Amino acid sequence: MNDQGDGTESDDKESDQSHTTSKVGRVLVEYDLDGLGQTMEARWTGNSEERYSLRELADWLNKHLLEVAMTRAGRQPIDGEVDNVYRLLTGDDVSSGVRTQARNDLKRDGVAIDKLERDFVSHQAVHTYLTKYRGARHSAPATDDNDRIESVTQAIQRLSHRTLRVTEDNLSTLENTDRLKIGDFDVLVDVTVTCQDCGTRYSVVELLERGHCDCVSTDDNTVESLD
Image (tube, rainbow, N blue to C red; front, side, top):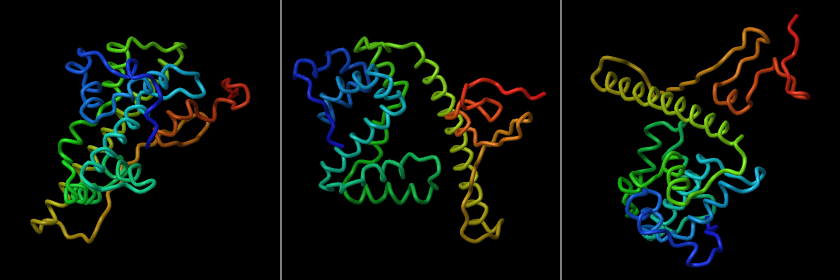
């Protein structure tokens, strides 16, 4: 997590307006990460092979915020620790118990976890920062489709995660009030999509990442005849 870019100081410094009105600009200054602004723009507008999506940029920046918060609290993260802790804090497949434990561990080490989580940025905030305050634009319009797919994916994942947490919390409440008898349990929320033509089944996230079912030939990317 040491890839802050090598731009000049004048290029790295954001405008006063972006500092005061842009969440991304504010956290870049507050966490002494000013140099990341230029790097984020370059990664969003670069060659398609090297280009980061808005979601990837948001996660990338949030991991830097987490690393700074841990370091300032005196907890020097070892290799791979920041990625793992971030996954525990934000992953849709992480149970509420595991997430709470990760938060408590950080809090015990002196990390202001509530503030840190408020400072985490969304892909929408990254988009606003890059386009409104840095004037960045994609070199290819096709990426708009990718961003739309990301937006849909995130919306579905948020709803799935909310369903998981609400289910966990309510089951725990019923158990704690002796209305439900159950041992240690895990709640899984999996949204699947089945194509009635080719019969293939995918998790909705996998389908969105693939962009097609098996009705589409992987060789020529055209719909196969079903007659």
